[in-house]
Amino acid sequence: MLALKAHEMGVPVAIYSEKREDPAAQVTSLWHQGSAKDEKALKEFIASCSVVTFESEFMDAALLEKIAAATKVEIYPRPREMALIQDRLTQKELLKKFRLPTAPFIAVSTEYEARRAWHALGKKVVFKKRRFGYDGYGTFVVKNEKDLEAFLPQVEKDAHGFIAEAFVPFKREVAVMVARGRDGSTLHLPFVETYQENSRCLWVKGPLRATPTFKRLGRALEKLLEKADYVGIMGVELFDTGRELVINELAPRVHNSGHYSLDALSMDQFTLHIRAVLGLELRQPIVLRPGFAMMNLLGTTDEAPKWQLSGDVKLHWYGKNENRPGRKMGHINALATSPEKALSLVKKRRADFRV
Ligand SMILES: Nc1ncnc2c1ncn2[C@@H]1O[C@H](COP(=O)(O)OP(=O)(O)O)[C@@H](O)[C@H]1O
Ligand SMILES: [Mg+2]
Image (tube, rainbow, N blue to C red; front, side):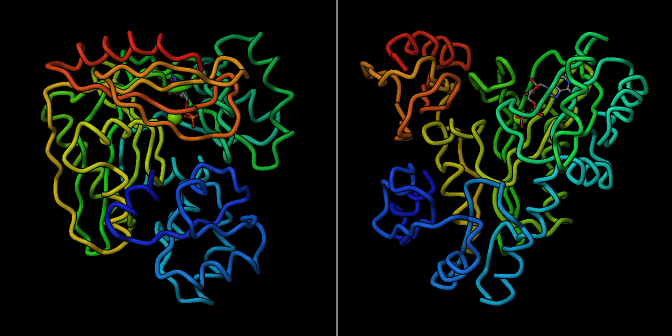
C-alpha cells in the first residue's frame, strides 16, 4: 500500500524483499530480491536509493545503522528509534521516561523471575515477547496458577526474553496514528475504537469524539515523537478503562488501525508516511464522513479465497500468496452517517467473502 500510494504521488519506489510473490513486489517493477540479513545485498540496495523506509519494524537496527553510516542514505524511522521501539522492554521504558501512561511492567528472562513478576503484578499478567511479537503471536494472558504453569516453560526458550505486564481491565481498546515530518511538524489522526479477537484486530470504527482527554493525549504523543526525534508515522494502541487511557503499544510504521484512512480521510496514513520521510509538508487530513469502519479479512481456511464484491464497501486486497487461518488477507472499508452504521455494514459484507 505504501508502494501504491508512492506511485500515485509520482515517486518511484524500489522494493527489497525475499520473494517475487511478496505483496509489494507485485506492484512495482523495481523489485530486488534479497534477505534482510544479507549485509552486502542490503547495502547495495540502500545505496541505490535516496531515502529508505520499512513496512515492518522487525529489522536488524544495528546493521541498518552501520549501512546508513557507510552509504549516507537517509533511513526513516532512523535505526536508533526503530531499535528502541522494536523491543517491548525499551519501548515501555521510553513511555515511562516521557511520563506517558502505561501499565506497570517487569522484565523477565527466567522462570523464577516470571513467577515473581506474576505475584508482584497482582496475579493477572500478560507476558509478552520482547522481540518479534505481532497479532497476538507472542502474548500470553496468565490469570491463574494453571495458566502460569503452562506459560513458564516458554520463558527460557526465547533468547530475547519477555516482559510481564499488569493485566488492564479495559472497557474498550482505542488507537491513534501520530506522524512527524523531517521538518519537525507533527499531527495525529482521529482516535478510533478497535476490537481484538484472540489478540488480533478484527475491526475498527470511528471517529471517536475529540474529547479533551483524547486531545491532551494526542498532543502528548506528538511531543513524544518530537523528543525522540522520530520521523514517519506511528501507530499507538491504547486501553480505555472508562476512567483513563493507558498506552498498550507503539508501532513505528503504518498500522492496521489506520487502514480506514484509505477511504475515510482526505489523506491516508501511507501518503502521510511517505510525505513525512520525504520531508514534504504535513497537513491535518479532513474526515470525509461522520462514520467509518474497517473490517479485516482474516483467513479461516487454506483454500483459495473467493468473494463477491458489493458496491457499498471498498476492498483492499493484499495479494498474499497463501490463505491461512488467522492471516490478514485484506480488509474492507465503509463510510456511513455514523460509526455504528459503518460497522454494521462491514460486518454484513464480511459474509460475502470466503477467505
Ligand atoms: N496488559 C494487558 N491487559 C489486558 N489485555 C491486554 C494487555 N496487553 C495486551 N492485551 C490484549 O492482547 C492484545 C494483543 O497484545 P499487544 O500487546 O497489542 O500485542 P501484539 O503485538 O500482538 O498486537 C491487545 O490488543 C489486548 O486485546
Ligand atoms: Mg497490538
